Length: 471
Image (cartoon, rainbow, N blue to C red; front, side):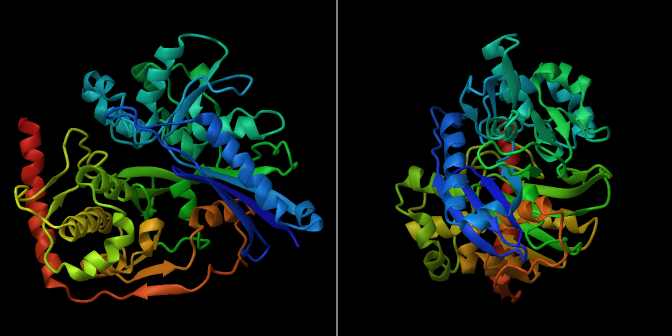
């Protein structure tokens, strides 16, 4: 029997998961990592800690296998957090911290580029934003100067070079796109974008398809046959995607992915490369909610509310008419793309309880997701939702999403959606993989109160954005 190793490097942990030939998990290991916020607008991670955590997770997962099983691990897939970047030296030593995807230190560079925003979107498929890699890479280039020993790129490229025998310096198309320097029509670095953002192309890794020969792991001689961003990989967690189904992933941030016919995309949403090989590439429409798990962390810090995630289900059952929360934690994502708005509760002078504040934050996530789903439905009907990520464990949150969207919400009993997706791609997209575990179904139900709050939220959000524009 053949086995597949999947590496899932996320914001808060690195995972290594081994799947058998039927797509069932036979071994796994998780190693937590740290995230620092040294000042407002900045989020950093220790690149050496990340690399060590990945190596430790791989070693521990493989040690759970018998000798013959370890020898039968035929391929590896690597999925990483997207839009996280760093500088490193040719010997693999980090030359900077890993600047996390949530970091917006490059925002001041955007002002002179606003006149070129439409052209940037047309070339890259992405709206002008400091969340993507380009402004962060420019900041790193300014920090490190023109040192020819310095490499710049996404975290995925740093890890690939550290993990492979020959030190492969490459990036897959899905992670390359999140640098906002890739021409999605030619699938190569754009000289125009490189010039506008001030990032030299010769410091960037070579672009390759998602499915390609990415090198061989140094310590176990397993070939790396697929690389992708974590959300891109999760799209394939159940194998070949259903075109009528959207994927909702609720992690630190939330993402909504739906099938897209071409690179043209939907106005105000992302057009993301979800897969590529030697024959071409495919796209998904993607919506972004920056404040999901992060919004609960903000709640805990701002209002000194202990363990909000573990209490959220009870709060949602308890509070029937929560206040409204303008959820701009981490910036207001699609389809507004505003990074200058501070989170706020409606009627902020009222003495809300912890439960009311928590329920309001939870409903704001559902409301922002619904805005994105409505725009996706204008191109191609979305009839079903599949949900994953840490917050998907909160059943009342899933039910509210079903009620508001009026779509059945499927929640597979699978905490390893990203690992499963990248393993499926690495294994060559086999048709015989078994579906992951039991699937819980949340059927939509009438919820007039939720619908009314959504309409009020939409109106209040419009005023919130207008006030922010005037300030």
